[in-house]
Amino acid sequence: MEIKIAIENDSKEISKLMLELGYNSSIKLLCEKIQEFEQSTTDQVFVAIKDNEIVGCVSCHLTLLFHKPGSAGRITSLVVPFFFLFITTAIRGRRTAGRNA
Image 1 (cartoon, rainbow, N blue to C red):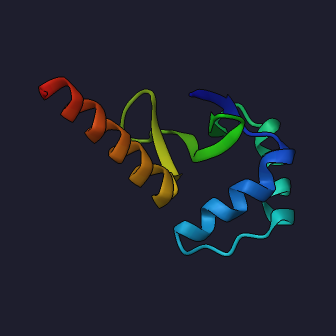
Image 2: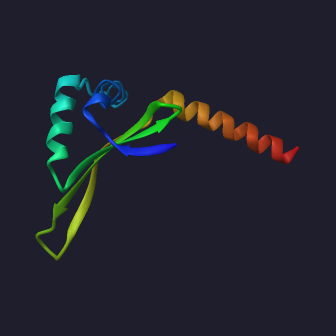
């Protein structure tokens, strides 16, 4: 699996992932957000890729703290499609069963 910074071309697949969270985010909106984040030093969207397919997405943000020195990180979305979790769990189960045999 590879983790990379999201690019505009990923927007269509990210839009599908957002549906898993109940958000009907348009491809256009996600393209605009990714463009904005490309200019930011404190915001980023990452995608997980397996076999040339996006299988996860996370949006991260750094916020300056007021009450003490430093920053805090915040995840505003994290999604892995159910089918990927199901398949991954099933494969791990088979591997574990094979070791115990």
